[in-house]
Length: 77
Length: 238
Length: 218
Image 1 (cartoon, each protein chain N blue to C red):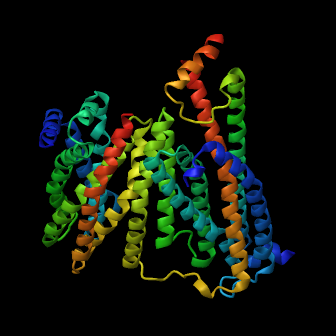
Image 2: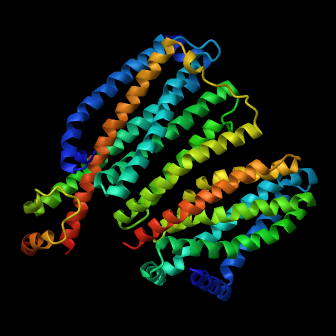
C-alpha cells in the first residue's frame, strides 16, 4: 500500500494529475447539473404562468401563429 | 441526420441514452483506474509517471474530438439552420476546454519529472495550447452579445474559420518545432505499447468518451430549456 | 468597390489618428526592445525579425478594432450591405483600405527600424518582401475577428483572443523566412508558403467576413 501511494517516488506528479482530472470532470458535471436544474426551474415557473403554451417544443416561434396565441393569456395576466 | 434535428425527438432519444452513457462511463472509469493504477506495471524507463498517460492521452483525444464535432455542428447550423446544432456546439465547448486544459496540465506534470521541465515548446504541446485558446475565444465570443442568436452565429463562423486553421496551425507548429528544436523529446512507443498498458488506456478513453456524451446531453437539455425560457420571456414582454 | 476604398482612405486621411496611432505604436514597440534585452549587437540581430513581426502584428491588431466599428455605429455599414455590391466586395474593400493605411506605412518604416536593430543591410529587401506578404494576411485575418466582434461587449479583449491564435502560422513562416535569410539559407520555401496562405486567405477570409457582417445585421 505504501508503494502504491508513493508511486515509485513520483507521488506528487501522478496524484496531482489524477486529482486535477477528478476536479475538472466532477466540476464540469456539477456545473452542468446545477445549470440544468436552474434553467428547468425557471422554465417551470414561466410555464406555470402560461399553461396554454405547454405543447410547443419549437424554439423558433412561427411569426404569424404566436401573436394570436399570446393575446389571450397575455391579456389575462 | 435530419431526423434527429427535431429537439423533442432528440430529447426522447437522449434521455434514453443518458443512463447508459453515465453507467458505461462509471464502469469504465472504475475498471480503467483499477487496471491503470494497480495492475499495469510501471514503465521500465519512466517508472510510475507513465500512469499519467491514462489521463493525459484520453484528454488530448477528447479535446480534438470535441472541437471537430463542434466544427461539424457549426457547419450544419449555418447551412441547414438546425437549432440543435447550435445548442450542441455551445454545450460542448466548456467540456472541450476542460479536456484540453486537463491535457496541458497533466502534460506539464508528466514533463516535470521526465524532461526536467514543466514546459517544452514541443509541437504537440503547442498545438494543444493553441486549441485551448480557440476554445476560450469561442466561449467568450458566444457570451459577448446581448442577443444569444447573434452570439451563436458569430461563434459558428469562428468555429469554421478555426477548423480551416487548425490543420495549418498544426503543420506550422511542427515545421517551426523542427526548425528550432531538433527532435529531442521522447515519443510514445506507438503501436509497440504493451497490452498491460493498452487496456487501461482504452478503457479510460471509453470512459472519457461516455462521460462526454452523458454530460453533453445534460448541457443540451439545459440549452434547449434556456431557449424555451427566452421565447417565453419574449412572449411575455409583448 | 474602388469608390469604397477611396471613401475609406479619405475618411482616414481626414481624421488621421487611427493610422498614425498604429504606426507610432509599431515604432515605439520596436524601440523599446533594446532597452529590455540590452544593446548587444548580436542579440539584437538575432531577435530583430521576431521583434519586427510581433510589433507589426500588434500594430495591425490595434487598428483593427475600429475597422468596422464606425460604419456599424452610424449605420453606413447597413447601407453598404443593402447596396448592389455583394457583402464580400464590401469586405475586400474595407480590408484593402485597412492594409493601405496601416500595412503599407509599416513596410516603409520597417527597414529603418531594422537598421536600428542591427539587421544587415542586405536583408532589408527580404524584410520588405516578407512584410508585403505578411501585412495583407494580418489585415485579412484580423478583419474576420473585427467583423465577428461587432457590437460585442468587451470587444477590446475579445478581438486579440480570437485573432492571435490564428496569427500564429503567419508569424511562424514569416519569422522562419527572415531567419533563413539571416543565416544565409534560401527564404524561398517560407515565402512560397506565406504566398499560398495569402492566396487562401484572399478567397476564404472575405467569405467569413461577409457572413459575419450579415450576422451582425440580423
